[in-house]
Picture 1: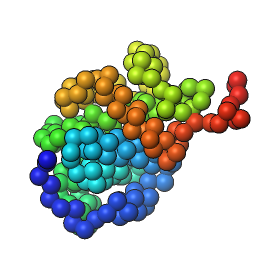
Picture 2: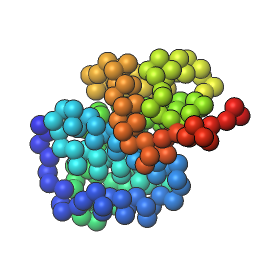
Picture 3: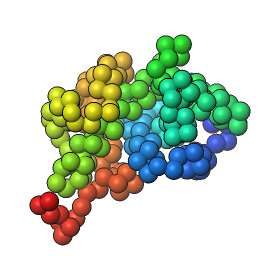
Length: 203
């Protein structure tokens, strides 16, 4: 297992309060919840600290709504965490998930975060164009097919997806399957449980 400093007394509830204070957009909150979900799933699979990995996933973009500029995003959030009693490893990990080569991904949780960040967003996008709008109905093949459609979910950085899995040392298709399974298990919270048969239409 990774050698974590402790959480400095911080809890998941503390992380949610911080996220809710800084992020007002429902879509960004759900993205952070999706990344938390994936990080917790991988921590459990790998015998790592589920609470620590989950907290990192939940807070990884907490400063993005206020500071979307890539020169500020992660740096301001990281400094805020350090100044407000959050663990240093968490502040460091925020920096490592950005695009600055000065902050390399040196830990397993750094690489895990990078590998799931954009992919959770892509899986959610695939789910929302299905008739059921349910992530549980998403197939790995549907995700890989949509990846070839450059116009679909164009804002997502496709160039990170396969390299992220390779850096995390997981097979890409298996990686997608883990993400789908994790998000399906938490679909109600993520807004991806879909519509009931009584609500489904042909529209």
